[in-house]
Amino acid sequence: MVYPFVKYADETEVVFSDIKINDDGEETLFVHFERPTEYGFDSVRFELPSYKITYKEGNYTDDEIAMFKKIVEQGAPYFYGWAREGGIQIA
Picture 1 (cartoon, rainbow, N blue to C red):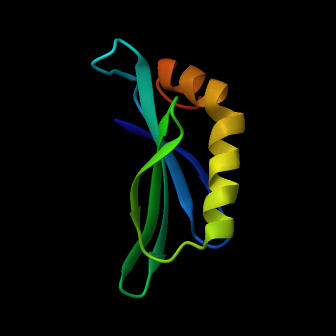
Picture 2: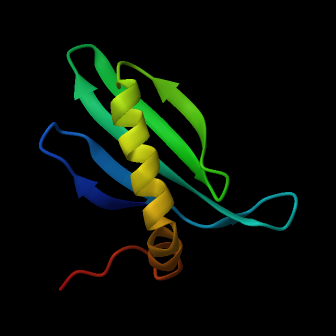
């Protein structure tokens, strides 16, 4: 399951996944950034808690990817909390 987080003015949409347990017994989740283009999508996906990029396609710039990584690093506790609650609960 994935949950919506935010949609930016450039059409980049951010979603995050359910928590999964990896082979080491560690809780992991993914945060995925995606923007539509004329021929498909620009996409980048980070795995938490390692913050490694596990998928990248398209034309996000290095600066955009660095900004996304900062969002993921600073938001990690929130992404885990929201994933435990089944997404962001908005009134």
